[in-house]
Image 1 (cartoon, one colour):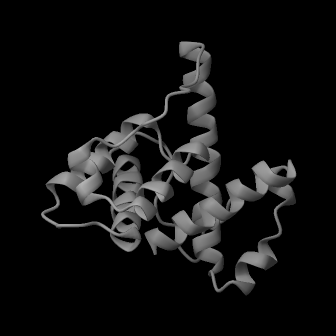
Image 2: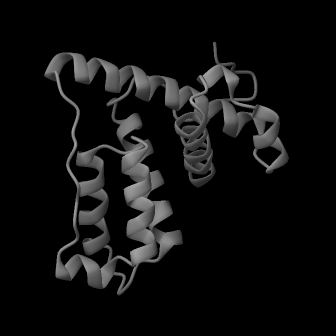
Length: 152
């Protein structure tokens, strides 16, 4: 389920960036037609609202937002496929992951024991890092929404 939430986040943030729509203007029916459940959609939107609040507060406190660009070193290139790294760049550009989370994902990729990580493995790793930070309390929202939960 976590990977599906990340897919929804990518879709929503791409739409926001591409069309300059507000979150409330995103067509949820399109997501349901793509096979996502209302619970997954609500969880993604809840996470997104919490994340946007967190990022806005962070920028207010520090007065800046990161403009850095991460390049893989030769050892990292051996483990992380170019498609998987492209996915990570997309997530970073959409602010789904922070610079710190990107570093954690790359570090865990190297320590994973896999000879080569492709897109599917990176997607699982991203989901675990994103939602692990939420469980630790880095964000104040909930990871999972139950069938009787709603987003206000």
